[in-house]
Length: 589
Image (cartoon, rainbow, N blue to C red; front, top):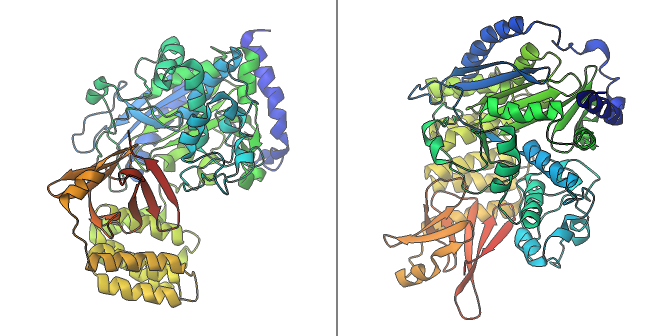
């Protein structure tokens, strides 16, 4: 038995864990295209991809199709920047986003082979207490913190998203959402925790470790977990809802869940290593690809997670998959280990995942269940169509929303309205956002959230009187009620705008400084706020509500408070959110 045959048999044995999910799909699943000549597949893709990109408004794309464990076809389409129209070439770099996760998992499995990591040993045993508490942002014995749950988290649970750790949620105490190993919930924080363990064991930063032990051995010469100066000439620009190219995001610190820069052909070297059993013993790789847990909400669809990849089990057998989403870069990879065939595509667009099912259909066959399970809208969604029409024709076009809400109530729900409003507001198109919200309020006149949404739009416009009146109506609404604390928070913001406080410049200079990833800067007589990898790329001016509490000019849902030590010196910066969450970072020494 060859190494590859041995690996396939081991993976097939592992897949037995999820065969109970296969039967519900029966014969209705499209077959794989493994017997279709690659020349015909490539011909189909050359016709299909440009059409999809045009209809989905995707500027640029790289794609690789793998057969028999090697790249059988690859192409580049479109442009890396919609304004400069520079073409996408083999060397153009994309943000891989969550493609980083299975890549990191592969490295962790190397450490498992070396006896440096035990998949089932609690991770807390690898790190000193001070490192753990720095990660959490508070002591281990913090009141109401689930220390008992935290002490159970293992590498296996972190890699399979069953650790219960957050994914974007924050607060004090550190939020653990369930007992480890009992449920599935996507969590980048679990990967970051494991990253800290790996860096402690190996005594170096992750980007250096993976460069030497994974990237170099696999020949991934164009890839890196942090920004490289040479990317300046070949990086693709990401594009948002309106197709505007964004500035490069030059990440200087690696994150095991997210920061890989790569090309489709470079990432294919990693995927081929997985499919061919390169770099790991067959038993180790089979363990990596064995399903560990089902995605709770999709048990009937055969979706789950192994160590690093998602899993999809249907009439075609087991596939492994992962999506990448950094907002303006969206990507997809799927492969069938037994057949040693796979697909990778990278896009520089917020619409990139909307074409996933069609690209999978024409390149591999079978089905892409992930997009629907993850609630990504298809490229031809009526939500996108309406947004583009409003962009082109102005606020009056928002009137179409009334009929669309009646025709597609399941599509034009609260999430869809919020999506459209957020995108228009993010580029300063407040009249369009307000027009959408007014139609929504007329359709839901008793809704507290509909009143509150429109109130916040008027607040962003600067009409505080109208905003306040709508908030008070939200307070008495009988449907979709808004918590009184949220309304009170926003009314405080309005009152603060009406009564801004002027603080002494020497005092502002005193509290200015670095607080971990958060920074307060004093210039031109004002205090400015900046957070690394935050929402805003440049420092934003602050306004004082009290001597120690500030809000970002034009931002109502977030505040910062400076806390002082016994000597009266600034000691920490506390982030306060309108939903009651809070986090804090000590001042750098």
